[in-house]
Image 1: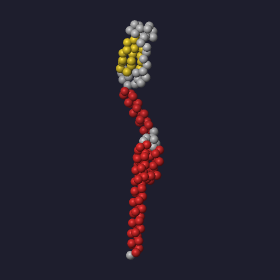
Image 2: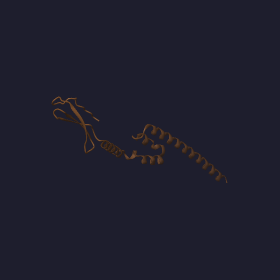
Image 3: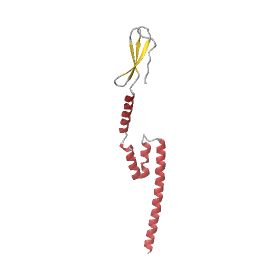
Image 4: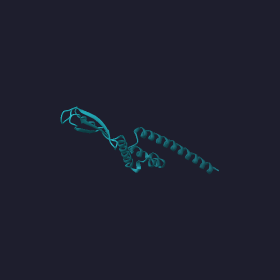
Length: 138
């Protein structure tokens, strides 16, 4: 909010200024200074209304959300992790909206889960090999 206050005296006649605040139809607040001697009026705009600021912020958030590429959206990253596992980690690290703590946590979780699944797969292959040896022996 830019605030510019005039001097205590009128620029025309040098008389005292009286301050009044006005609320306009659009919701903006205008500060008006009126000279008590000559009636000269100085308007100082205090800024936008609160609803206008909130609306502008929501619009900017909507525009930045739309500008996010499809390959950085959460749904695509989840599908990529489910299909290719840790090979999708660069998508998480290159995604601009994810914080560093989430990136580290997701990386550790995905690597740990991949490690568990790898060992489970290796154990199941050993069991299948032993089963085939039993079948060949009979």
